[in-house]
Image (tube, rainbow over all chains, first blue to last red; front, side, top):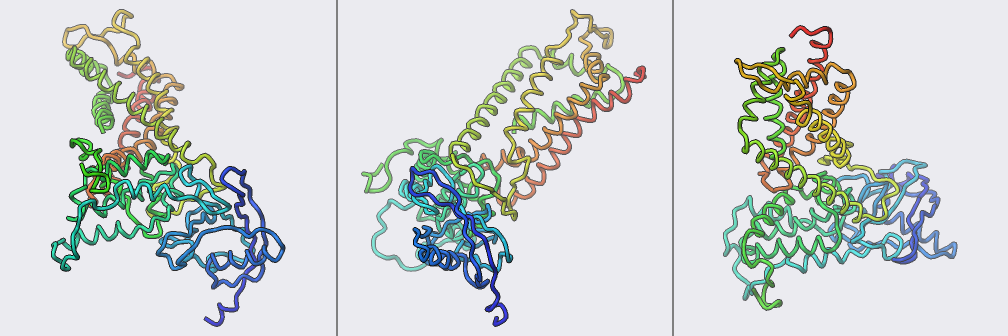
Length: 268
Length: 213
């Protein structure tokens, strides 16, 4: 520990700067000396911002919140890879020891039409919220809190639903997909409820409405490259996409599926 | 999946070409044409399936371009479970090559020289279309052998991602079968691509030297 604590590297950064949604973006170069290798990637950017502020310029905008890999806020494409080169980790869990002395590190925002850049590396990811609002919930009134295990759910189903529910909605799937498709996110949200008894009431309407919303937002189509699964910090499987396709086909064959969900929309 | 099934049947039919003489191929062709309206229905069905395949392929490609108006400075695959490769990322281009191939192939053989052009052969005493001669005449020319072999390599890359992709896209993939189906895609791609591409090579090797049929 003590040996690596003192170890530092010098790096060169190429970061994306963009004043506003409409402005033309460009890469800006910075040199950063004496970066502690035990720093997280975001701490390194904090140090960069102190350097930029001292020089009297506008600091670099990027998003972060929990900085422990569970909130899905941080969202950087580092060296051409969503969340950087480490699998199963968010950008905040990426450490500077991953990089070598003298390395040039390129940092870009998520790039998708449905995720427009607000400023620099910050993107507007509300398209995901709208997909979720289209059907990623249970519309039925659930009444008071029920006893634990009042509804019996087999362990394997509970596990698969939990694996899908591990999605933190960061958008790395879209960022990494060569087609900028949101299929992995949407399928995780569809599957987590489709597998559980609580999700059955709205099952058909949910998948139709969420997929329709996903298409409306301007995401690309899935061509099964599985790059999303490789980039997902929660390692969500594309088997969820196969389940979503199956759910969609089944629902599309059923009647009256486009009607509203739950009491908020007036029921169906 | 209908298209893969067609390719399998097509290859099985083509294996008659290995016989070294024209009779098995011509018999097979004559029996196919004896189906009459049923054959026309199959051909139209196949053409419509291919058309649908092409239209959706262009839609997917267009939506992908539209969904990312500003591309990355450089994007890199993260490896692991990723199936991203030169072949899987360029399905549209291997597809375009195969589309061009298909037009040439159908024009050359399906709508090529007919019995009226003197391409007749006798099978068990009955005069039939000598499709075997049409094939041999093409594949004793090096340029056609090269064109067919090249096109079939593209077919291999297209099927390597396409076979598995069809199951995944239609959601008829049980998690347990996901890996075997993907592996099967490789087997199908190799069998079909090489199955088809050895035919012109075989004919060129055995027939161009003076004909030993």
